[in-house]
Length: 248
Image 1: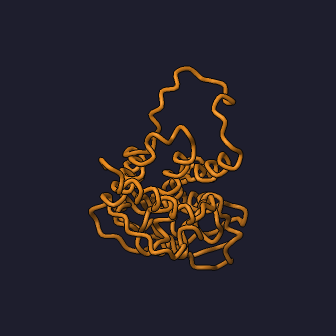
Image 2: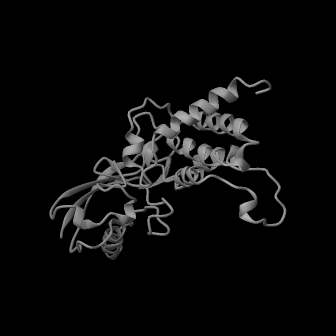
Image 3: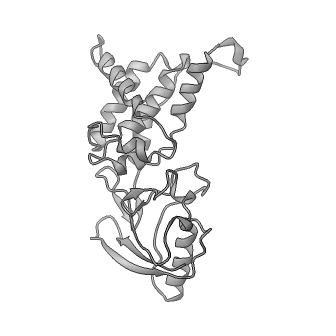
């Protein structure tokens, strides 16, 4: 299979960027999208050209580092991460457009690599529990209902990839924040900070420059972990309750 890649190239965060056409030749259909980029980079380096910079880590659909917009869709044509997108999902001879996440809060570092440390700062602002449990205790001493435990697991599945931000016309991080606030807020260990957590994380999100949610569900449509936008409603309720609490 052969493709024409139209790739965003940008030397650093202070330099202007542009799309560059790069051929991808002799690509096997069972290669992942990142493996295809590895082959293209080998060809570029053999020609004495700078390789395409892109982010990745586990390549197992777990870490969310492989943050690319492919033909206008975060992570590509399938509902999964970029590393789990395979070249058989494209047509031989197709032109493929590859861009970084586009959001004020995710500045481009180089080519397709963006700085997503804004998510880290949101987590640092309140994504924790402060209960001092001492040594490990038997799990049955703190009973949690099956339905509640499963809901908490559903929200904790968020890998923080940022696809929700990249898909949203407002670059909103509400789905990410909702998942992080909810998975702790559902559990008894997370109750002491429930109000302060919602306030701190939403305020940090706003400070970082993410936009507001306008309920168009682009975030849910591209989330590789299929996290529901319904959790944003819970986040809003927690935030409103916390903002109206005495002393907040």
